[in-house]
Length: 264
Image 1 (cartoon, helix red, strand yellow):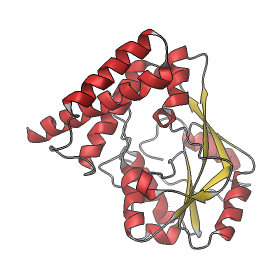
Image 2: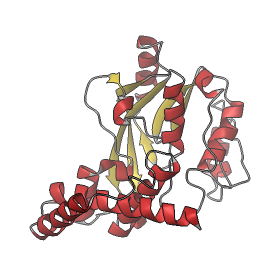
Image 3: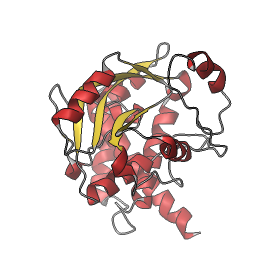
């Protein structure tokens, strides 16, 4: 846990006598720091990562272990992440979870196990993933990226980690039977949150080198098409058409803002 204030010690204490638990504390805030400190204590062949806002399917352990055995040459594995909402979200937020599922770390790649497609930037999500411990000896989570207690969505550390693992020749497998429900709190059930998420995703494209000054901005023709799609299809309630346009426009704004901020 990292700079924890939610009573984790009290939650863990009753299980200490029946489970081989080790509570690792990191005084500085930051998810990447917490994960890296925990890795210092890990000694198993694989490390399973879960978020604190998920409900774990009882069969997740068996699903991963069986997949490890079937694919011994693979180094990382990712399972299904089903988005669930606390309370009753606005209709538009349900549409976001359907058409832009990664906004809430939703992940479903089908009923059959298969390789993640690195060329399509497919990777597991941190709410439900397992990685060979040996693969993490040379590559750790970048502590300048990821959630750090600041307001708003943040990330990028997982993308960078899997990018580096792929460069080192590691491959991964999708494990649909390894499932979690990912619970979304009411404060994230707003279009303000969605807008900021995709702006930060655009900024991360610059930080991670996937975009630069030369291709940060959309062409005028494409921008006009996206603005038309956003205005037209939102007015007639076609979220499958306007939400992708909204995402691309917000990402562009994030890329441009990041370049401007980096120049100061």
